[in-house]
Image 1: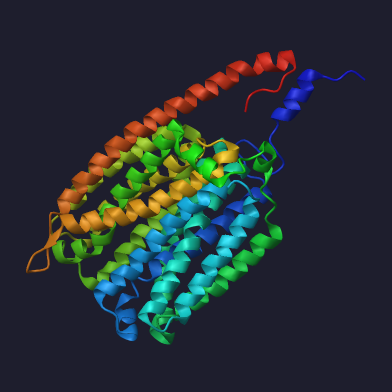
Image 2 (image 1 turned 90 degrees about the vertical axis):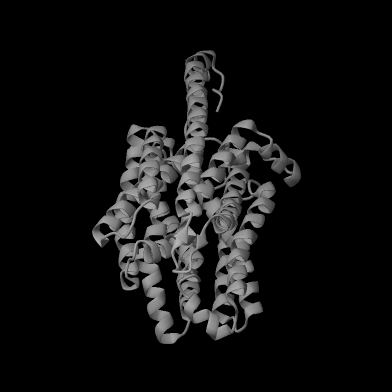
Length: 443
Protein backbone atom coordinates (compact mmCIF):
# COMPACT_ATOMS: atom_id res chain seq x y z
CA UNK A 1 0.00 0.00 0.00
CA UNK A 2 1.33 3.41 -0.99
CA UNK A 3 1.87 5.80 1.91
CA UNK A 4 0.04 9.10 1.91
CA UNK A 5 2.67 11.78 2.60
CA UNK A 6 0.10 14.48 3.27
CA UNK A 7 -1.75 12.23 5.67
CA UNK A 8 1.46 11.38 7.47
CA UNK A 9 2.37 15.05 7.82
CA UNK A 10 -1.08 15.92 9.10
CA UNK A 11 -0.90 13.12 11.63
CA UNK A 12 2.49 14.31 12.83
CA UNK A 13 1.12 17.81 13.25
CA UNK A 14 -1.83 16.60 15.31
CA UNK A 15 -1.74 17.43 19.02
CA UNK A 16 -0.31 14.90 21.39
CA UNK A 17 -2.61 12.82 23.54
CA UNK A 18 -1.92 14.87 26.64
CA UNK A 19 -2.91 18.17 25.04
CA UNK A 20 -6.45 17.16 24.03
CA UNK A 21 -6.98 20.33 21.99
CA UNK A 22 -10.65 21.17 21.64
CA UNK A 23 -10.93 24.78 20.47
CA UNK A 24 -13.16 26.81 22.71
CA UNK A 25 -14.16 23.92 24.97
CA UNK A 26 -12.65 22.04 27.90
CA UNK A 27 -12.71 18.25 27.94
CA UNK A 28 -13.68 16.58 31.27
CA UNK A 29 -10.04 15.73 31.91
CA UNK A 30 -8.96 19.31 31.23
CA UNK A 31 -11.58 20.56 33.71
CA UNK A 32 -10.05 18.23 36.30
CA UNK A 33 -6.56 19.56 35.55
CA UNK A 34 -7.75 23.17 35.94
CA UNK A 35 -9.50 22.39 39.23
CA UNK A 36 -6.66 20.44 40.83
CA UNK A 37 -3.95 22.91 39.76
CA UNK A 38 -6.05 25.85 40.97
CA UNK A 39 -6.61 24.23 44.37
CA UNK A 40 -2.93 23.30 44.61
CA UNK A 41 -2.03 26.91 43.82
CA UNK A 42 -4.49 28.00 46.51
CA UNK A 43 -2.57 25.98 49.13
CA UNK A 44 0.77 27.44 48.00
CA UNK A 45 -0.51 31.03 47.97
CA UNK A 46 -2.23 30.61 51.33
CA UNK A 47 0.97 29.30 52.90
CA UNK A 48 2.78 32.37 51.56
CA UNK A 49 0.09 34.77 52.88
CA UNK A 50 -0.45 33.13 56.26
CA UNK A 51 2.49 34.44 58.24
CA UNK A 52 1.79 38.19 57.91
CA UNK A 53 -1.70 38.18 59.50
CA UNK A 54 -0.41 35.81 62.21
CA UNK A 55 2.42 38.17 63.19
CA UNK A 56 0.58 39.43 66.28
CA UNK A 57 0.48 35.85 67.60
CA UNK A 58 3.84 34.57 66.35
CA UNK A 59 6.03 37.35 67.79
CA UNK A 60 5.06 36.87 71.45
CA UNK A 61 4.73 33.09 71.15
CA UNK A 62 8.28 32.61 69.85
CA UNK A 63 9.70 35.74 71.52
CA UNK A 64 11.10 37.19 68.30
CA UNK A 65 11.63 40.82 67.30
CA UNK A 66 10.04 42.59 64.30
CA UNK A 67 13.39 42.59 62.47
CA UNK A 68 13.70 38.83 62.98
CA UNK A 69 10.16 38.38 61.73
CA UNK A 70 11.02 40.40 58.62
CA UNK A 71 13.92 38.04 57.98
CA UNK A 72 11.61 35.05 58.30
CA UNK A 73 9.27 36.52 55.69
CA UNK A 74 12.02 37.49 53.24
CA UNK A 75 13.82 34.13 53.65
CA UNK A 76 10.86 32.43 51.97
CA UNK A 77 10.93 34.72 48.93
CA UNK A 78 14.67 34.64 48.34
CA UNK A 79 15.01 30.88 48.86
CA UNK A 80 12.14 30.38 46.40
CA UNK A 81 13.91 32.60 43.88
CA UNK A 82 17.23 30.78 44.20
CA UNK A 83 15.53 27.38 43.97
CA UNK A 84 13.69 28.35 40.79
CA UNK A 85 16.94 29.38 39.13
CA UNK A 86 18.86 26.27 40.24
CA UNK A 87 16.18 23.86 39.02
CA UNK A 88 15.78 25.53 35.62
CA UNK A 89 18.61 23.51 34.09
CA UNK A 90 16.98 20.11 34.63
CA UNK A 91 13.29 21.08 34.75
CA UNK A 92 12.74 19.74 31.21
CA UNK A 93 14.49 16.40 31.73
CA UNK A 94 11.66 14.70 33.65
CA UNK A 95 7.97 13.93 33.45
CA UNK A 96 6.34 17.12 34.72
CA UNK A 97 3.85 15.16 36.83
CA UNK A 98 6.67 13.46 38.77
CA UNK A 99 8.52 16.74 39.17
CA UNK A 100 5.35 18.41 40.47
CA UNK A 101 4.73 15.65 43.01
CA UNK A 102 8.32 15.72 44.32
CA UNK A 103 8.37 19.47 44.88
CA UNK A 104 4.81 19.62 46.19
CA UNK A 105 5.73 16.94 48.74
CA UNK A 106 8.73 19.05 49.78
CA UNK A 107 6.49 22.11 50.08
CA UNK A 108 4.07 20.21 52.33
CA UNK A 109 7.00 18.99 54.43
CA UNK A 110 8.14 22.59 54.91
CA UNK A 111 4.59 23.65 55.83
CA UNK A 112 4.46 20.87 58.42
CA UNK A 113 7.79 22.07 59.84
CA UNK A 114 6.28 25.56 60.20
CA UNK A 115 3.45 24.08 62.24
CA UNK A 116 5.92 22.22 64.45
CA UNK A 117 8.37 25.12 64.89
CA UNK A 118 8.92 26.08 68.52
CA UNK A 119 11.65 28.73 68.14
CA UNK A 120 12.80 31.54 65.89
CA UNK A 121 15.53 29.44 64.27
CA UNK A 122 13.14 26.55 63.77
CA UNK A 123 10.61 28.80 62.02
CA UNK A 124 13.34 30.45 59.92
CA UNK A 125 14.58 27.05 58.74
CA UNK A 126 11.04 25.88 58.04
CA UNK A 127 10.26 28.94 55.90
CA UNK A 128 13.47 28.45 53.93
CA UNK A 129 12.57 24.83 53.23
CA UNK A 130 9.03 25.77 52.24
CA UNK A 131 10.27 28.51 49.93
CA UNK A 132 12.78 26.23 48.19
CA UNK A 133 10.04 23.82 47.11
CA UNK A 134 7.17 26.31 46.68
CA UNK A 135 9.26 28.35 44.27
CA UNK A 136 9.32 25.43 41.83
CA UNK A 137 5.76 24.12 42.28
CA UNK A 138 4.18 27.11 40.56
CA UNK A 139 6.55 27.01 37.59
CA UNK A 140 5.96 23.29 36.99
CA UNK A 141 2.19 23.88 37.18
CA UNK A 142 2.45 26.62 34.53
CA UNK A 143 4.51 24.32 32.30
CA UNK A 144 1.79 21.66 32.64
CA UNK A 145 -0.87 24.20 31.65
CA UNK A 146 1.12 25.06 28.53
CA UNK A 147 1.51 21.38 27.63
CA UNK A 148 -2.10 20.34 28.26
CA UNK A 149 -4.07 23.33 26.92
CA UNK A 150 -4.23 24.88 23.47
CA UNK A 151 -3.32 28.54 23.12
CA UNK A 152 -6.95 29.61 22.71
CA UNK A 153 -7.84 28.05 26.10
CA UNK A 154 -4.95 29.29 28.24
CA UNK A 155 -6.48 32.66 29.11
CA UNK A 156 -9.39 30.98 30.84
CA UNK A 157 -7.06 28.54 32.60
CA UNK A 158 -4.80 31.35 33.83
CA UNK A 159 -7.89 33.28 34.96
CA UNK A 160 -9.08 30.39 37.12
CA UNK A 161 -5.65 29.65 38.57
CA UNK A 162 -5.01 33.32 39.40
CA UNK A 163 -8.18 33.36 41.51
CA UNK A 164 -6.16 31.39 44.06
CA UNK A 165 -4.89 34.75 45.34
CA UNK A 166 -8.42 36.09 45.74
CA UNK A 167 -9.65 32.88 47.34
CA UNK A 168 -6.83 33.09 49.87
CA UNK A 169 -7.99 36.56 50.91
CA UNK A 170 -11.69 35.70 51.02
CA UNK A 171 -11.64 32.20 52.52
CA UNK A 172 -8.11 31.16 53.48
CA UNK A 173 -6.89 33.94 55.73
CA UNK A 174 -10.14 34.36 57.75
CA UNK A 175 -10.27 30.59 58.30
CA UNK A 176 -6.61 30.56 59.34
CA UNK A 177 -7.22 33.38 61.82
CA UNK A 178 -10.17 31.47 63.30
CA UNK A 179 -8.04 28.34 63.73
CA UNK A 180 -5.13 30.26 65.25
CA UNK A 181 -7.38 32.09 67.73
CA UNK A 182 -8.73 28.77 69.02
CA UNK A 183 -5.77 26.37 68.73
CA UNK A 184 -2.63 28.50 68.40
CA UNK A 185 -0.71 30.18 65.58
CA UNK A 186 0.68 26.90 64.23
CA UNK A 187 -2.73 25.23 63.75
CA UNK A 188 -3.33 26.67 60.24
CA UNK A 189 0.00 25.26 59.00
CA UNK A 190 -0.82 21.80 60.35
CA UNK A 191 -4.27 21.86 58.76
CA UNK A 192 -2.88 23.15 55.46
CA UNK A 193 -0.29 20.38 55.29
CA UNK A 194 -3.06 17.78 55.81
CA UNK A 195 -5.31 19.30 53.13
CA UNK A 196 -2.35 19.55 50.76
CA UNK A 197 -1.57 15.86 51.27
CA UNK A 198 -5.08 15.02 49.98
CA UNK A 199 -4.50 17.24 46.93
CA UNK A 200 -1.18 15.50 46.29
CA UNK A 201 -2.83 12.08 46.49
CA UNK A 202 -5.45 13.13 43.92
CA UNK A 203 -2.75 14.42 41.57
CA UNK A 204 -0.82 11.16 41.95
CA UNK A 205 -3.88 9.03 41.24
CA UNK A 206 -5.58 10.94 38.40
CA UNK A 207 -3.18 13.29 36.62
CA UNK A 208 -1.71 11.66 33.51
CA UNK A 209 2.02 11.76 32.76
CA UNK A 210 3.09 15.01 31.10
CA UNK A 211 6.12 13.85 29.15
CA UNK A 212 5.62 14.73 25.48
CA UNK A 213 8.53 17.17 25.70
CA UNK A 214 10.89 14.27 26.46
CA UNK A 215 10.38 12.93 22.93
CA UNK A 216 12.19 16.00 21.57
CA UNK A 217 15.51 14.79 23.04
CA UNK A 218 15.97 17.45 25.72
CA UNK A 219 19.38 18.88 26.52
CA UNK A 220 21.10 16.52 28.95
CA UNK A 221 23.45 19.15 30.35
CA UNK A 222 21.64 21.23 33.02
CA UNK A 223 24.19 24.06 32.82
CA UNK A 224 24.07 24.21 29.02
CA UNK A 225 20.27 24.11 29.04
CA UNK A 226 20.11 26.93 31.59
CA UNK A 227 22.57 29.09 29.65
CA UNK A 228 20.76 28.41 26.36
CA UNK A 229 17.46 29.51 27.91
CA UNK A 230 19.01 32.63 29.44
CA UNK A 231 20.63 33.63 26.15
CA UNK A 232 17.47 33.46 24.03
CA UNK A 233 16.61 37.08 23.12
CA UNK A 234 12.87 36.45 22.94
CA UNK A 235 12.91 34.70 26.32
CA UNK A 236 14.85 37.62 27.80
CA UNK A 237 12.04 39.98 26.78
CA UNK A 238 9.60 37.70 28.59
CA UNK A 239 11.80 37.61 31.70
CA UNK A 240 12.09 41.42 31.68
CA UNK A 241 8.30 41.74 31.42
CA UNK A 242 7.80 39.32 34.32
CA UNK A 243 10.32 41.14 36.50
CA UNK A 244 8.79 44.56 35.84
CA UNK A 245 5.26 43.28 36.49
CA UNK A 246 6.38 41.91 39.86
CA UNK A 247 8.33 45.01 40.85
CA UNK A 248 5.40 47.29 40.07
CA UNK A 249 2.85 45.12 41.85
CA UNK A 250 4.89 44.52 45.01
CA UNK A 251 5.70 48.20 45.40
CA UNK A 252 2.25 48.96 46.80
CA UNK A 253 1.35 45.68 48.47
CA UNK A 254 3.41 45.84 51.71
CA UNK A 255 2.08 49.27 52.69
CA UNK A 256 -1.50 49.25 51.45
CA UNK A 257 -3.08 48.38 54.80
CA UNK A 258 -0.99 51.00 56.64
CA UNK A 259 -1.96 53.63 54.04
CA UNK A 260 -5.67 52.79 54.33
CA UNK A 261 -5.72 52.92 58.13
CA UNK A 262 -3.41 55.89 58.78
CA UNK A 263 -3.85 58.06 55.67
CA UNK A 264 -7.39 57.26 54.55
CA UNK A 265 -8.60 56.89 58.16
CA UNK A 266 -10.24 53.53 57.53
CA UNK A 267 -11.31 52.01 60.87
CA UNK A 268 -9.16 48.99 61.67
CA UNK A 269 -12.28 46.85 62.12
CA UNK A 270 -13.23 47.54 58.47
CA UNK A 271 -9.88 46.41 57.06
CA UNK A 272 -10.87 42.71 56.72
CA UNK A 273 -14.12 43.82 55.04
CA UNK A 274 -12.17 45.74 52.37
CA UNK A 275 -10.05 42.69 51.61
CA UNK A 276 -13.11 40.47 51.46
CA UNK A 277 -14.88 42.83 49.04
CA UNK A 278 -11.90 43.10 46.68
CA UNK A 279 -11.22 39.37 46.97
CA UNK A 280 -14.82 38.47 46.14
CA UNK A 281 -14.80 40.67 43.03
CA UNK A 282 -11.48 39.11 42.03
CA UNK A 283 -12.97 35.63 42.31
CA UNK A 284 -15.66 36.65 39.83
CA UNK A 285 -13.55 38.78 37.52
CA UNK A 286 -10.57 36.41 37.16
CA UNK A 287 -12.29 33.77 34.99
CA UNK A 288 -14.10 36.50 33.01
CA UNK A 289 -10.81 38.23 32.25
CA UNK A 290 -9.39 34.89 31.13
CA UNK A 291 -12.31 34.39 28.75
CA UNK A 292 -11.80 37.90 27.37
CA UNK A 293 -8.11 37.14 26.73
CA UNK A 294 -9.09 34.04 24.73
CA UNK A 295 -11.86 35.82 22.84
CA UNK A 296 -10.26 39.21 22.06
CA UNK A 297 -6.55 38.50 22.33
CA UNK A 298 -4.13 38.64 25.26
CA UNK A 299 -2.45 41.86 24.18
CA UNK A 300 -5.72 43.80 23.95
CA UNK A 301 -6.70 42.68 27.44
CA UNK A 302 -3.21 43.56 28.72
CA UNK A 303 -3.45 47.04 27.18
CA UNK A 304 -6.85 47.53 28.84
CA UNK A 305 -5.43 46.35 32.15
CA UNK A 306 -2.41 48.65 31.84
CA UNK A 307 -4.64 51.68 31.20
CA UNK A 308 -6.97 50.75 34.06
CA UNK A 309 -4.02 50.19 36.42
CA UNK A 310 -2.40 53.53 35.60
CA UNK A 311 -5.62 55.49 36.11
CA UNK A 312 -6.66 53.76 39.33
CA UNK A 313 -3.23 53.69 40.98
CA UNK A 314 -2.89 57.46 40.49
CA UNK A 315 -6.34 57.97 42.02
CA UNK A 316 -5.69 55.55 44.89
CA UNK A 317 -2.29 56.93 45.91
CA UNK A 318 -3.71 60.48 45.99
CA UNK A 319 -6.83 59.71 48.02
CA UNK A 320 -7.51 61.49 51.28
CA UNK A 321 -9.85 60.35 54.07
CA UNK A 322 -12.57 58.45 52.19
CA UNK A 323 -15.81 56.60 52.90
CA UNK A 324 -15.74 52.81 52.70
CA UNK A 325 -17.79 52.62 49.50
CA UNK A 326 -15.40 54.91 47.61
CA UNK A 327 -12.29 53.11 48.81
CA UNK A 328 -13.76 49.70 47.96
CA UNK A 329 -14.76 50.90 44.47
CA UNK A 330 -11.27 52.24 43.73
CA UNK A 331 -9.60 49.06 44.97
CA UNK A 332 -11.95 46.79 43.00
CA UNK A 333 -11.21 48.70 39.77
CA UNK A 334 -7.49 48.67 40.56
CA UNK A 335 -7.66 44.92 41.16
CA UNK A 336 -9.40 44.42 37.81
CA UNK A 337 -6.59 46.32 36.11
CA UNK A 338 -3.90 44.30 37.86
CA UNK A 339 -5.63 40.97 37.17
CA UNK A 340 -6.09 41.91 33.51
CA UNK A 341 -2.36 42.50 33.19
CA UNK A 342 -1.26 39.39 35.05
CA UNK A 343 -3.68 36.92 33.46
CA UNK A 344 -3.22 38.14 29.89
CA UNK A 345 0.56 38.37 30.27
CA UNK A 346 0.69 34.81 31.64
CA UNK A 347 -1.37 33.51 28.72
CA UNK A 348 0.68 35.42 26.14
CA UNK A 349 4.08 34.48 27.53
CA UNK A 350 3.11 30.81 27.81
CA UNK A 351 3.48 30.75 24.01
CA UNK A 352 7.11 31.94 24.13
CA UNK A 353 9.11 28.84 25.12
CA UNK A 354 9.55 25.80 22.92
CA UNK A 355 8.18 22.55 24.44
CA UNK A 356 11.63 21.35 25.53
CA UNK A 357 12.38 24.75 27.15
CA UNK A 358 9.10 25.25 29.04
CA UNK A 359 10.24 23.88 32.37
CA UNK A 360 13.41 25.97 32.35
CA UNK A 361 11.59 29.09 31.17
CA UNK A 362 8.85 28.79 33.80
CA UNK A 363 11.39 28.09 36.58
CA UNK A 364 13.45 31.16 35.71
CA UNK A 365 10.28 33.24 35.39
CA UNK A 366 9.04 32.09 38.82
CA UNK A 367 12.46 32.84 40.28
CA UNK A 368 12.34 36.35 38.85
CA UNK A 369 8.87 36.90 40.31
CA UNK A 370 10.05 35.98 43.81
CA UNK A 371 13.30 37.96 43.70
CA UNK A 372 11.65 40.98 42.04
CA UNK A 373 8.94 40.97 44.70
CA UNK A 374 11.57 40.95 47.45
CA UNK A 375 13.57 43.74 45.79
CA UNK A 376 10.39 45.80 45.27
CA UNK A 377 9.45 45.50 48.94
CA UNK A 378 12.94 46.67 49.97
CA UNK A 379 12.85 49.61 47.54
CA UNK A 380 9.37 50.60 48.71
CA UNK A 381 10.61 50.60 52.29
CA UNK A 382 13.40 52.98 51.29
CA UNK A 383 11.02 55.34 49.46
CA UNK A 384 8.20 55.74 51.98
CA UNK A 385 8.53 57.22 55.44
CA UNK A 386 6.18 57.54 58.40
CA UNK A 387 5.31 60.80 60.12
CA UNK A 388 4.99 61.24 63.85
CA UNK A 389 1.21 60.84 63.48
CA UNK A 390 1.63 57.50 61.70
CA UNK A 391 0.77 58.72 58.20
CA UNK A 392 2.79 57.38 55.27
CA UNK A 393 4.82 59.94 53.36
CA UNK A 394 5.76 59.62 49.66
CA UNK A 395 3.27 56.81 49.09
CA UNK A 396 2.31 58.54 45.83
CA UNK A 397 5.92 58.04 44.65
CA UNK A 398 5.28 54.31 44.69
CA UNK A 399 2.34 54.92 42.39
CA UNK A 400 4.56 56.81 39.95
CA UNK A 401 7.03 53.91 39.93
CA UNK A 402 4.16 51.51 39.17
CA UNK A 403 3.00 53.77 36.31
CA UNK A 404 6.50 53.78 34.80
CA UNK A 405 6.97 50.01 35.06
CA UNK A 406 3.51 49.48 33.56
CA UNK A 407 4.32 51.65 30.53
CA UNK A 408 7.67 49.92 29.94
CA UNK A 409 6.03 46.51 30.32
CA UNK A 410 3.35 47.51 27.82
CA UNK A 411 6.05 48.21 25.26
CA UNK A 412 7.78 44.88 25.92
CA UNK A 413 4.51 42.94 25.74
CA UNK A 414 3.67 44.64 22.44
CA UNK A 415 7.02 43.54 20.98
CA UNK A 416 6.47 39.98 22.21
CA UNK A 417 2.93 40.01 20.79
CA UNK A 418 4.17 41.16 17.36
CA UNK A 419 6.95 38.57 17.37
CA UNK A 420 4.50 35.78 18.15
CA UNK A 421 2.14 37.03 15.43
CA UNK A 422 4.94 36.96 12.84
CA UNK A 423 6.00 33.50 13.96
CA UNK A 424 2.42 32.22 13.67
CA UNK A 425 1.96 33.80 10.23
CA UNK A 426 5.18 32.21 9.00
CA UNK A 427 4.08 28.79 10.26
CA UNK A 428 0.66 29.13 8.61
CA UNK A 429 2.24 30.18 5.31
CA UNK A 430 4.63 27.22 5.35
CA UNK A 431 2.00 24.62 6.23
CA UNK A 432 0.32 24.09 2.79
CA UNK A 433 3.67 23.70 1.04
CA UNK A 434 4.87 21.24 3.65
CA UNK A 435 1.74 19.14 3.30
CA UNK A 436 1.98 19.26 -0.47
CA UNK A 437 5.56 18.04 -0.45
CA UNK A 438 4.85 15.37 2.13
CA UNK A 439 7.19 16.75 4.75
CA UNK A 440 6.49 17.43 8.39
CA UNK A 441 5.61 21.08 9.06
CA UNK A 442 7.80 23.02 11.44
CA UNK A 443 6.54 23.15 15.00
